[in-house]
Amino acid sequence: MDAVNVLIHAADELSEAGVKAMLSEYEKLRVVPDSPDTRPDVLVVVVAGVVGTAAYAFLRRFHTSGPAPEPRAVLVADRFKAEDLLMAVECGVAALLPRSGLKAGTLAAAVTAVSRGAALIPYHLQGVLLEQIGQLRTRVLAPAGLTLAGVETRERDVLSLIAEGYQTEEIASLLTYSEGTVKNVLYGMMARLRLHSRAHAVAYALREGVI
Image 1 (tube, helix red, strand yellow):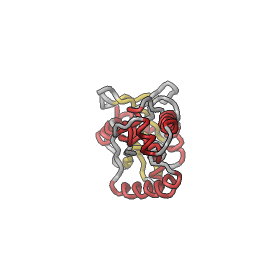
Image 2 (image 1 turned 90 degrees about the vertical axis):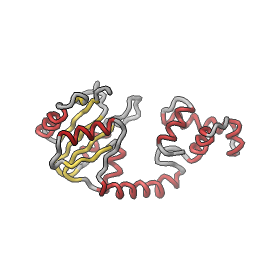
Image 3 (image 1 turned 180 degrees about the vertical axis):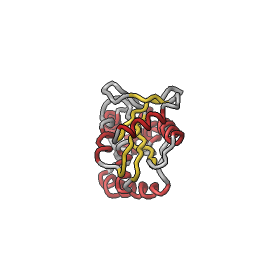
Image 4 (image 1 turned 90 degrees about the horizontal axis):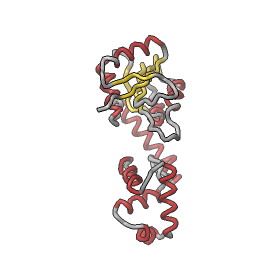
């Protein structure tokens, strides 16, 4: 496994130095500076007290429309506001850790797990997050014909049939679209989500639980 590039952002120099010292014990975790040339795999954001707008503003810096993969984040704080959970996830937060009693092994394990695609949300907050996602789906996305992955309903229908092996002409017949409409639906989605081929689009839909 290659070393994981970790960028640390803390509210004060003492906290930042402490986290750096914790992670420096692990060869597979490489602390990198915050610079325009830096491409971190994982962000570690440490907040004294409750997480506020400054922390989310920092995280949003790394979630742009550029081609570079977006880093995932470990958020360390004294207290998390339940109503902000969905916003945290939208900002790339994949792990929430309490600041009190934080140990080097716990932090290193969280960073490593997040770099591999895992999510670590405290049990008592998981239900809150699921409820917020459900409200987002029913109140915002469903009326607009969208899914949580940003895929429109008709895009999902086309992808489902591609995954089953149907060709463009057959998909058009089954959905009562023209072949041109099927192509426009598919390639419009691929351009929007930066997908490179039909196979890539199907893989994305499967990974995101769209189909």
